[in-house]
Image 1: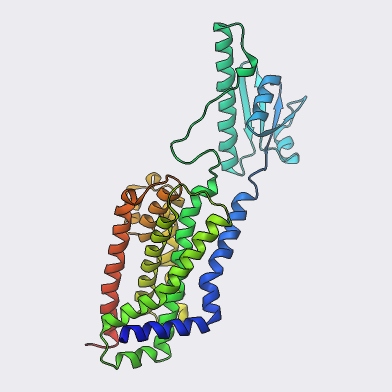
Image 2: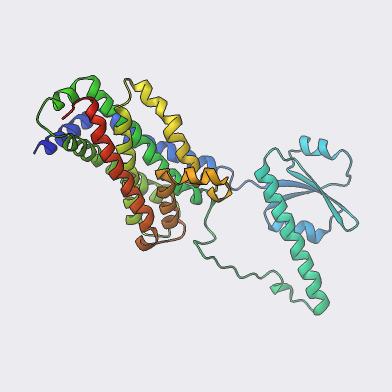
Length: 355
């Protein structure tokens, strides 16, 4: 009954706090939408490439791989041409050698052009070899390529691969922020002190807070997941129920962490100071930067970050279509995080009542 009383009070208190509700329910969807448009706004933009002395077949093949090809009659002052005409690269054919000058202010664009030019050259070489073997080339079948994918399909975008990590991070971040500030407010207003003056156990207080704020965390999670899939049309290959379950575990970890750290803060500003130390590193170790490309000691740090396991499970469900059997180890580790933080929260309340 005492736990139920805490839960009921938190629910009523949160419902009447419109700004907190907006921060939990609406803010993540607004941020997710903004990130979606940031990643997809330039999706249809063609990279501009200048060419000189290249064959018509080569130019046509560049166009087929979605490059905007501009033919030049001179190769003088290449760098000026690139700058003045907003070219991403300039290709010159000199005998059997291709000389490519890249604008290179965006390494991503440079790598994309390199890959597309390389694929075009390989295609040209294949056609030449094939023509030597068989003089009669069936033009209608020349460019026929059968493609298959182990995971997902040809509609998978770069944002689709990032979205599971972003969904997990936004759930983690906003739940941590709200829970940390809310419990701090409980202390500064004297509510927690009055609660601790009763016979209620510290474990019951922690359970009450986790359950009370956990209800809103679950609602927030469901809203973010449904919004991402059905409004932003993020590709999902697996079961949406698994996505919700994993995000709920992430939310409970964030909630437990927020409650714990709030016991060491004396003001909202001090809660905010934990964000660059505790929260921001989570996004880097969630797979935004490939973990396998990191130094060994950084990979070890990643493995103590809860979002590392949450993002891995979400990516596996979203992109690879994995089921619960494939991601159970990530879920178990998240549950262990929750239990450990629960125990630490109980000990953390000893600062305010030693019983």
